[in-house]
Length: 78
Image 1 (cartoon, one colour):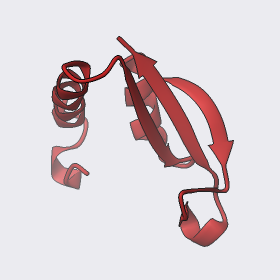
Image 2 (image 1 turned 60 degrees about the vertical axis):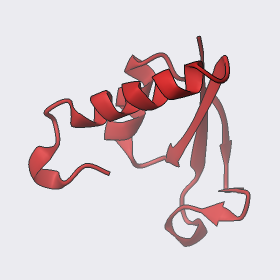
Image 3 (image 1 turned 180 degrees about the vertical axis):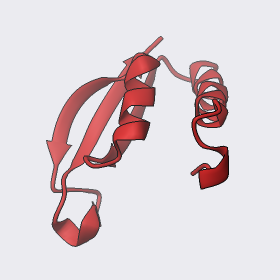
Image 4 (image 1 turned 180 degrees about the horizontal axis):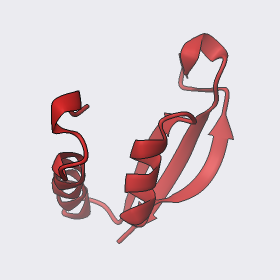
């Protein structure tokens, strides 16, 4: 998470690109999931090449908003 006072300054993108470089040095596919209402994070990941794979009420026991929202799984490949 990026502190509110630092949002929309590229911090999240920079952190995500660093994470992807780490992943790409070890694998050719990266996964990401988010609460369906986290539009800022979803748009950022889509801009970085992530594509929707599926929607779930829970992923490995994790729910969003106490089960009131779906989790969206995305994938990117190198």
